[in-house]
Image 1: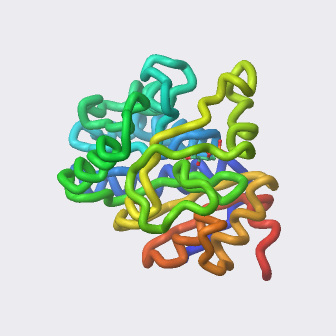
Image 2: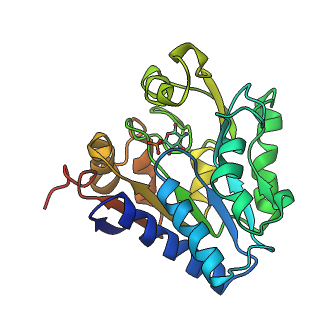
Image 3: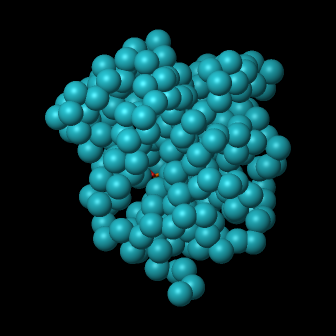
Length: 242
Ligand code: GLP
């Protein structure tokens, strides 16, 4: 695991943005796995800026998002499809048909798993960007999720509902279920970059970097992957030994 500690969220965005853009420049047909939440916002801002400055071509890039709230329409302001359009896709020359986000209206796990087939058909994810929950969730794979899970409908924990309620008018508006790529789906990516900033992520980052591998800390599954870069600010790194 490659660990990079930066000063702040701005530097996090630059480092992560450069890493992603360099991959796009090297492979115009890249398949990216993308994340939502507050963590990637500075990264996407930086990516948009650089893309415009350097005329970086996204026309053949394909993307798969990690997750979506169950029951939210793509037009809902808190849906992850809406977030991605607003924070990235509307500002680069990507073909929206090549941007996939799991459907919030999926009925059952048989349907949900079709997302993994689509990823496979695209040749697999070359580079997966991840955020991390306070409880160590990645995607919406909450503590206790099977390491063998594929894309499925999942229940959100109270902690996650509480943490994400800051984006909604009130806590009761936060969906209690989501559709998320599974831990196995995520582990299939050829390369993974996980980003985090802030003190409230420090405990999860400690479990991610120092282990042990434990289903109660879903992020720790990444210790079994051979190409992971973790980029965090000083606060998120503050509980690490040494
Ligand atoms: C959300 C998302 C995750 C995200 C995480 C952290 O619930 N499902 O994909 O990485 O929680 O969110 P944030 O970056 O806003 O702290």
